[in-house]
Structure formats: C-alpha cells, structure tokens
Image (cartoon, rainbow, N blue to C red):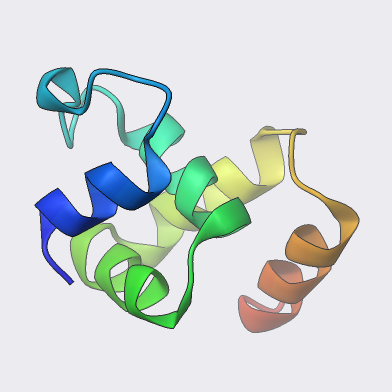
Length: 77
C-alpha cells in the first residue's frame, strides 16, 4: 500500500498533502489503528517502531473497544 492510497482512504477529512510522517505521527498511527485494514496495518508496522505505536495506543483514548482490545492483544499490553 502506498502513502497516497493511505491518505485518500483513511485521511478523507484532512488535507493529506500537508500530512507529515514525523510531525503528525500520533494522528496517523491512531487513525490507522482504528480504521486500517491489513495492508494499512502492515504499512504502519513497517513505518513506525513498535514502541511508538504502543505509546500512541496507551495514551490516546479515542479507540473503539474492539480496536483497543485487538491491538492490546497484538502487542501483549
């Protein structure tokens, strides 16, 4: 999955041309953890270190119960 495919599919509500992988990483990670499919999850895991993904997962509170439980189990949190 390319960055362009991700931005058009999962970031419909923001100007995707202005998304920065470093500056907006928390937003990008949380959006993909909540709404991403398997290719998006693979991209996420290749792009960001697991420690950062875990940090977002444990500090953000906007996840659905289903997504939170899935990712907590995946990362053994």
